[in-house]
Image 1 (spheres, helix red, strand yellow):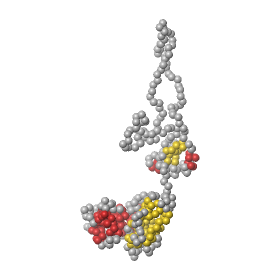
Image 2: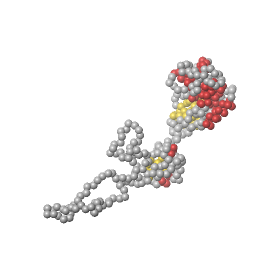
Image 3: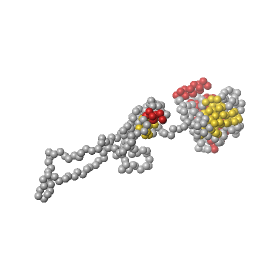
Image 4: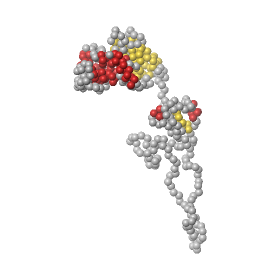
Amino acid sequence: MKGFIATALVLICIQHAPRASADPYEICLPAVERAVTTHYRVQSNSGRSAVRDALTQTRSQTDSGTSSGGGQIGVDLVDIIGVNLGGSSSSSKTSQLSEKYTRDSSLALTNEDYLYTLTTVENPAVADLAKECIRSVGLGQGAFRYTINDVQSDDFSITYHYVPQASSDPGFLTVTNLTVNGGAAIDQPSILGAGTKIHAYAGYTQRFRRTKEDESALVQLDVQGRPTVPVSIAAKKKSDPLPVGMVIASPLPWGQFAQLATDSSSFDARKNKWAPCDGRSVAGSALATGGIGQAPDLRGVFIRGLNDFAAGSVAPVASTQADPDFGRRAMDFQADAIGEHDHDMGYGQHGLHDGKGLANLELRNDRPSVRTRKAGGPETRPKNVALYYYIKIN
């Protein structure tokens, strides 16, 4: 059975490789849900609801569907966990969970608490699978597994699991001390103070706060009869205040700009933070993943704001200010133009005069129409200063 469980978990891990930000339990929850459905009287994907009902000892939402698989058909998961609760001491982890979820009826059952509760049931196909899931989480230090959560935030946390390594291991271990050295401190309340009992497979999450962003920290958990569990916390990475897609103007040509921006003048869209706005491809960059595969070509042109920036209750742009070409999108080119206008043409008296002194004006079809003389340069433009444009791509 254990070989089958391990193989199932390996296959799940291959098919659903976890993302860095994903819940570490997500990769094995589907297999656990299937086992619960097969061996207990709950419908598919209802194991979580049944466990929560069992912890609060309420039957109103209990799923009464019958599974079609083998195993202990007809045995109600709520009854099983209820029996465990009845035989537990008030200090047991299961009783603590019962109090936690009974106190707040709106509190959603966490994956961590769900899996731990399943480790207490009698069916080995369910309990062992839940235990294997917990064993697969985080990093290992002796009998402990731990996961660092939100490590780049001002507040982060560490979740510890005690995982017995032999049948002779006790059901719980006792904390003797929890210390932090460096740029962090324990955030109250202290979950893992001296004397805390860490029950097997149960998760214990302690929060910490950074006291110095640019300094690493070392968190050490001391447990009676076991080696210290040290956890290193890296210094917080300095965030880049300039978002991807931002365009800036600079008097510096690309080589100098790249050097001062600690970028490479030998352009690689996968590695460079910036790109010249000359229409080049930026495939492989963060900007490209957002749907923009080329840098805007801003050579020789002015930048003009679009008529609409975002949906909402903002009043439409004034007609005296709006771009007359409605429907334009970002990076659309617009050719130069002169606004519609007319000119008054003045005529002076010329030709022969009659006796009354009036000019003799004659209109002839063989004469060309009157034209004004050419004036001005090759384009219409306001006063301006030439600069380079660069766009943030990573």
